[in-house]
Each structure stands twice: as C-alpha cells, then as structure tokens.
Image (tube, rainbow, N blue to C red; front, side, top):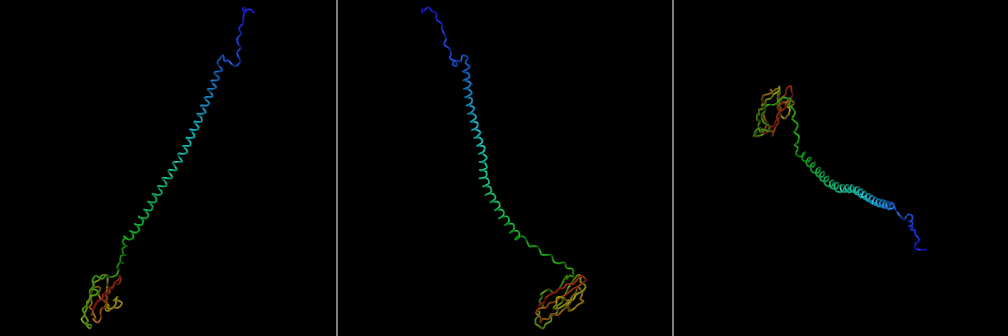
Length: 213
C-alpha cells in the first residue's frame, strides 16, 4: 500500500470499572473512610466515658467507706475512753461520799421532848434547902428544924419523916396548903429524909429533901 492510503484512528477502549468519569467513586471512598474514622473516634470516646464513670463510681464508693472508718476509729474511741471514765468515776466517788458522811456527823441531835405539863398543885417556895447540914455536936442532940412552904392549887398539906409520900406515911396531916411546921432532927442519924405533900382536886405533889447532922 502506498502512503497515500488514508488511515483511521481508533481510541483505546476503557476498561470497565477502572475509570470514574463522574468522580462518584472517590467520594464514596472518602465517606466510608470518614465513617470509619468517626466510628473509631466514637468508640474511643465511649471507652473513655466508661473508664471515667468507673473511676468516679469507685471514688464515690471509696469516700463513705473512708469516713465511717475514721469516725469510728477516732471519735468513739476517744470520747468513751475519756469522758465516761472521768465523769462517772469522779462524781460517785466524791459527791456521794462527802454528803452522806458530813450530814449525819454535823446534824445536831433532835431536841428532847418537852416535859409533861403539870396538872397537880405546885410548890411556889420551900425551905430548908436540900442537903442542908443541921450542925449536930453530938449524937444525943435534938435540933429543931422549921419547914416552910407555899403552894397553889392545893387544899391541904401533910409532912412525913423517912417517907416520900407524907399522906401515905404521915407524921402530921391536915396542914394548910401554905404554912410551916417544926420537927426535931435526931443527931443520932447521919442523915434523914423529910417530905411535905400537898394535894387538891387536880392531884397530889410531893417535895422531898435530905438533911444531914
């Protein structure tokens, strides 16, 4: 053939699936890559959130367990060992022992009961005095002694020797409630008792004395 023969140009056929004339294939790859990256980032964030929550919960559970331990180990052990041991041991040992021991010893004894009210006749004066010495010089002397008395509430009197009731063992009766009477003291006796008794509607009263030689 001569060089004048016209030639026809043929385009090389495009392989199926190798070309992307519209550019949609590249965008799909980018979107898949972006989704993959976002998935990885989301997973990492989720893991971080789980770890953070786990740490927070573990700290939250650890806080209350630390406080009760410190409260129980310090406060209750200090207060019961100091305060109850000081107060109860000091109060019962000092206050009750001081008050009961001081009160019975310092309290004065109760006063004696008042004497019973006299309802019978009463001597307002009397002589001679009790235990008076007569002044005997020998055993044979007889020295006169005058008994004088005054009374209220009586109607009669009696005098007796060696007795404590002149009406029961009288030397003389029918005497006035206020008067006098003379007796001889026998010096042969070292001592002698004399009684003047008075009586009235309210009762009887005796006055006894001892005279010495």
